[in-house]
Image (cartoon, rainbow, N blue to C red; front, top):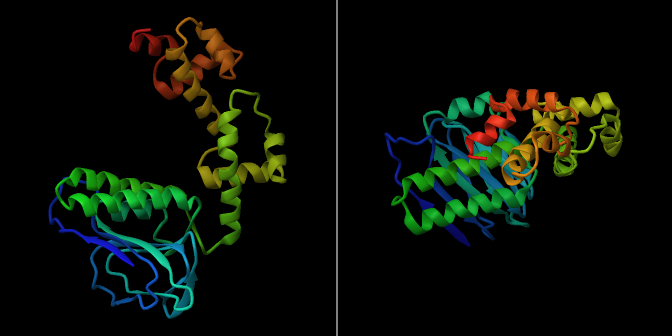
Length: 278
C-alpha cells in the first residue's frame, strides 16, 4: 500500500522549510531505493513504524526496526530497502529550506544518520497531519504546509537519539520518563537524592544524565516548571497575593520568587499581573 504526495519545489520561498514530498510505503517487500551522491538536493527522513528495513552506509548494512529512522542530508548517497520477510511500514518526507543545514548541524545531526525516536506516536501523528494536508490541498496552503513540516522536524529534533550509542539512548529514555512527574511535583521541595534514587544512580550521575539530555540542570527544569505554574496562577487566582502564589509554587521566600521571576520574564510578578489587567 502506498500513500504519497509529490509537491512543486519552489526556488524562492518566504518559509523556513517546505516539503518536496511525503508518503507511506506499507507491505511493499520490493521497495528499494538507490541514489548516487550528488543526485538529490533535499533532506529526507525515513521512519519505520513497523516491520524492518535496511540502510547501507559506506558498504555497511544496518537494520532498522519500529521507532527508528534514517536522516539524509542533501547530496548524500542513499541506499535503503525493505525487508522481504518482514516488510516495513515506512513513513518518509523530503524537505528543503535555506536555513536547514545550519539548523541540523548546530544540533549535532550531522554526526549520525541513524536515529531512534523516543515517542513514536508523537512523530507518527505529526507525519500524518503533514501527509493529509499535502494530499488534500497540495500547494494551495503553503504556509500550512510549512508549519506542519516544521512541526514534524521539531518533533524529530526533540525525540531523536543516535542509534550509535544504545546506552545513551536508554539513559535519555529514563530521564524523559521522569519529566512529567517532575513537572507535576515541581512545587514540592526539590530533593536531588530522591530523584537520583528513582533512577538508581548517584546524584552526580543523575545530574550528568539530566544535563546531557535536557541541556540544563534538574533544578533549572524545576524552576521553569514552578514559574510556568506561577504565571498561570497569577492570572487565574486574582484573589491571592503574590506571597500566597509564591508559596504554592514552591517559593516560601517572596523576594527569591520575585528574583527568579524577574530573571525569566524581565518583570516582577506584580508587573506581570498589571500587564494583563489584574
